[in-house]
Amino acid sequence: MKTQAIRIQQHGGPEVLELVEVDVGDPGPDEVRIRHHAIGLNFIDIYYRIGLYPAALPHGLGFEGAGVVDAVGANVKFLKEGDRVAYGQSPLGAYAGVRVMPPNMVVKLPAKISFDEAAAVMLKGLTVQYLFRQTYRLQGHETILFHAAAGGVGLIACQWARALGVKLIGTVSSPEKAALAKKHGAWATIDYTKENFVERVKELTKGEKVPVVYDGVGKDTWEGSLDCLQPRGLMVSFGNASGPVSGVSLGILAQKGSLFVTRPTLGTHVVPRSRLEASAEELFDLMIRGKIKVEIDQRYRLADAAQAHRDLASRKTTGSSVLTP
Figure 1 (cartoon, one colour):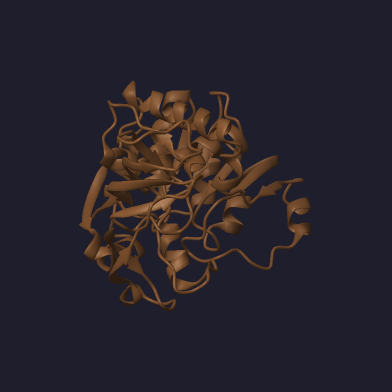
Figure 2: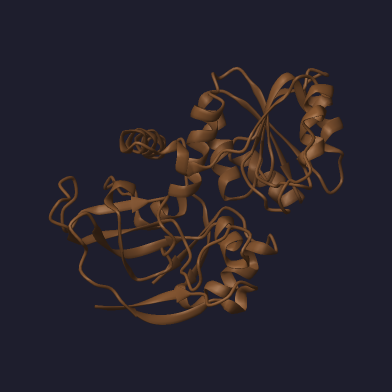
């Protein structure tokens, strides 16, 4: 069958995104074919578009989607044609109407969660799950620092922290984003365009600072984040929105209090499949109970993926964004 998909022939700006017609064959014995109803948009897509994260050209984009299974391989036993499904970690290529992919990355979608919600939440929600429940397992009494609290990952983090009883201090870039983060459960916000976030963290914690910092921003917040940590605190650097962290001296970690640092990724936290299913179940349960609500503030047609990338890169977006085939 034929379907529309986004492909890039070279790395570069949003203009390299091309909408093309591609052939999609039947799934192999260990594959599943999914007809997308919605596709997630994430900052990591930009990293692959510009070549920060390498992939052989030409290639597609996108890791996250939701839809209906329309064909399964002979060896696939846990999915069947007609199943509502979603995924948040896959081979590149979610920006498409139909795709074939490995089934081990796919989970069944509860009836109470829409395709749009699933496409908007899977990668970001599973990211918060591993950050809060695996990388540093929050117990419910901590005060933490989370950068970019009004973004797609950040708003889910605010809600998850509130559900756990954790006090989340979130950095934001405007009063509007501060209000949004507070609405979603942030205990306190810091507008880094007007305030020194290190000094504010010290004030908010009465000098104690925090045991863990979750930082998806990268080089712009790296040094300051280390100064927000308690002795033997953990710096979780999980993204590069402002550019990659480089030139790190291990001696700095000693000087600032025997600090720990990790650079985790979702892919290593959702294997084996049993861990993926458990993580998704925890996320879906919080959504069904109303503890996590997905804010889809932007919707784009697949043909408008370039504009979606421009908006995301310029930080014009809030909450989550989805593409529709």
